[in-house]
Length: 323
Image (cartoon, rainbow, N blue to C red):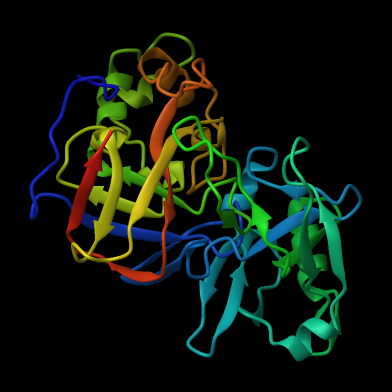
């Protein structure tokens, strides 16, 4: 049954594998597909280490408000740099900064102790990337030109950021960087195929354009970290504990379903937001899955690793405990 409501048994070893790994060095900007990645209890290495903030309001900006952010393309250089490119037609000049600035570099940057990601949560910290190659404010000025407002590029500061407990894990004690909330997002290929199949039923209604008779919904719209295949549509809904790569690898706990906003409506290739897809379709068959947000649609599962590890494309996924 679509929606993860049917009873399932744990898939045997050798059936579910990692098919893709995505990291997003700068929150809400384009993701990077990698073959392997280290992880800690705070998520994949280099994922959401950086964010962009409104320089006046000191609030984190996401593609929910500025969809064109997905057209900003970070990459990781062999020299340990974070390289940032803009669409050619923008006229904005690319730049690079140290992916993980040294303590000496950070001493030259101002730290902001109270940045707002969610108004209902405690503030978080970050260092303003103030200069590179001796050029003052180059990252901020380039990003400001592209986004059409004063912004700063921020590197996560040292203050741990506590994340929310969940209905299933009321005593959850974990931290994250600039993720919306939880360290990892796990999603299966089959789940997005199921969304596409459901979408076809509503073409021509509620503002769903005819092009969706054939257009696909790329999995990148959902901004997952670990993409798996082999379990079936929404198999991850029923997983509570998994390991990846080996049965005795660090345990990864799926602490909640991921409630979705309008961000998946943003096309990662064009930066344009669709008026209906996939959000209106998700509202048809993916609500009622999170006990505390029953009216919000869910796709994918939020996860917290118990320790350090490495995940590789092709690794087997071992489901250690079902819900």
